[in-house]
Image (cartoon, rainbow, N blue to C red; front, side, top):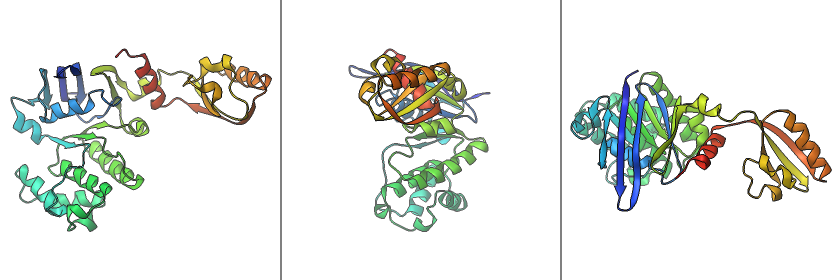
Length: 305
């Protein structure tokens, strides 16, 4: 599989802050790839470098083989980016905004695709509404439409569903899944880890400007073996000697609800018996499988900054 995005030893520093400390990774053509990390990990800086908004101090980035510096016209033509920030021109309607965006890429007769994008993002009835009059969620839909208006083979979504309603999420993911199935490469950054788990085939995790995990979603989930036990206490709390089993040990002995890792099912009987002998009364018991959030927390806690 050839690379849709190739990132080689990219470094970027802002004064004393090292935003990227030698990031290298490849994202294959047709992949749905998740780029995850806490705030300040370097995700947006990396996306800005890929998009040509920011220049790396060193290293190389190419989009479908086209260097983002030496062949920037082609690399930008192949890329559609949805930024985190709500940036819009207040003087135009939705349709006018998308026509202007089309013009940037030399597309003068693009109304059929504009209509299709607006339909799939539920913007059709807002086509002639001025951008100023739209809600925040509707403005974000327009940002997504702008990124897709020239049918880019590589799509980068930087927190596309941050602070928006469930309806937009469902509408957006249905359309983006379709584009991915048609061969478009999709790169997603999100703090909604359930989205990344459901959508992404492979995931890279950044911390303090470094790649600390890079693997398939299935392989990352397999890092946490066994199950998790969610206990809800009616009276009393988790005995102190069981705190090492807690996913979040801090405050576990005082919490009404606590999640414990079961390394093997034999631990279940021991934990319940220990709670009974301590005098705690359990209101509810739920067995859960590990999810991407558990993996993320474990990797971030284990990775050195």
